[in-house]
Structure formats: C-alpha cells, structure tokens
Length: 72
Image (tube, rainbow, N blue to C red; front, side):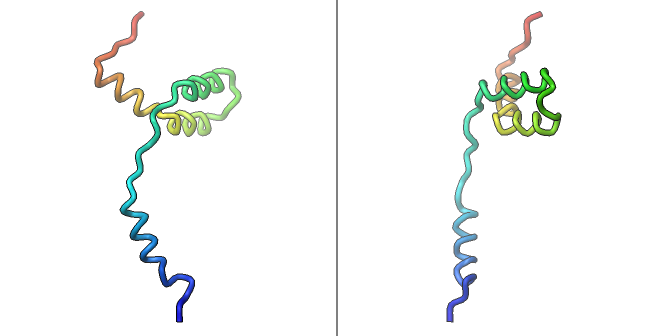
C-alpha cells in the first residue's frame, strides 16, 4: 500500500542535488531600494532585504576585488 509520503525521500534527495545559482545583480533594483530608503518609504528591514535580493553583496565583492576606490 502506497502512502502520500512514500516517494518523499526520493523527491527530497533529488532536490538536494540541484544546484542554485543566484541571478546576476540588478543595478536598477539596487538603486530603487536605496532611493526608497532615502525618501523614507521603506523600513530598514525591507530595504536590506531588497538590497540583498538585488545582489548588493555581489556588487560590493566585485568592487573590492577589482580594487575600485570612490573618487572624492
């Protein structure tokens, strides 16, 4: 007799073998999230979540790796 969960181990096993590549950073979304913060339209937690999902960490890492420095 088959139960609804009989194949769950096989499904979970196949999901763990899947690779996940995050999408590339979206500079428009990063800029929009920052501007919403500056205008006070979003609470800090929402802004941080938006910056994270738009790829802020990747952008910062690439800037550091490239040796970029801001101009005064």
